[in-house]
Image 1 (cartoon, rainbow, N blue to C red):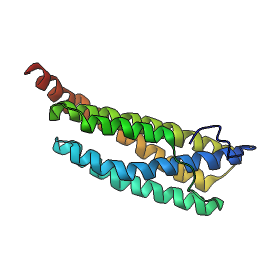
Image 2 (image 1 turned 180 degrees about the horizontal axis):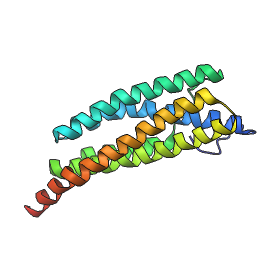
Image 3 (image 1 turned 135 degrees about the vertical axis):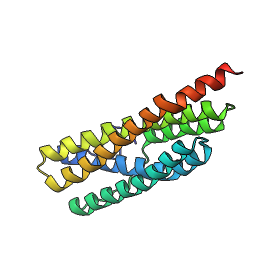
Image 4 (image 1 turned 90 degrees about the vertical axis):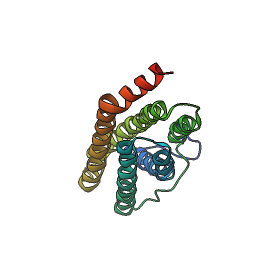
Length: 175
């Protein structure tokens, strides 16, 4: 979904919040489809487990967005989030690449972290809008998800630095 969609009127901060929420909903929906493919493509057991756990977390995050939709009386379904589609496509390209399993795992972590950073920015933006609008229940739900996204990014970063990237470096050195 482009920020200046012709079909969407953004006349108030509330309109912008609704737009951000639908964008996040689309992104989470796309991730629910992409994460099982990433799990399947991963070779390292801890990475497989991280993707599996994040899939469950992502489902819960989309449920929180559904709850926000009910609280605000808005339909969360809208246009496709093209930014997330691009990030998912990049992850798919890593999956399809001709690489060693170790290098593919390092690439999958990079793709996943780009997704996490995009989501952290989106949830932070929506939370800020909700704060300005005095929507305390919405703020609490968005904060919970934003914190989960940050923790996932930290877990992926730790896994990359302590294990996966070292394995990828060794795999490359042995070719």
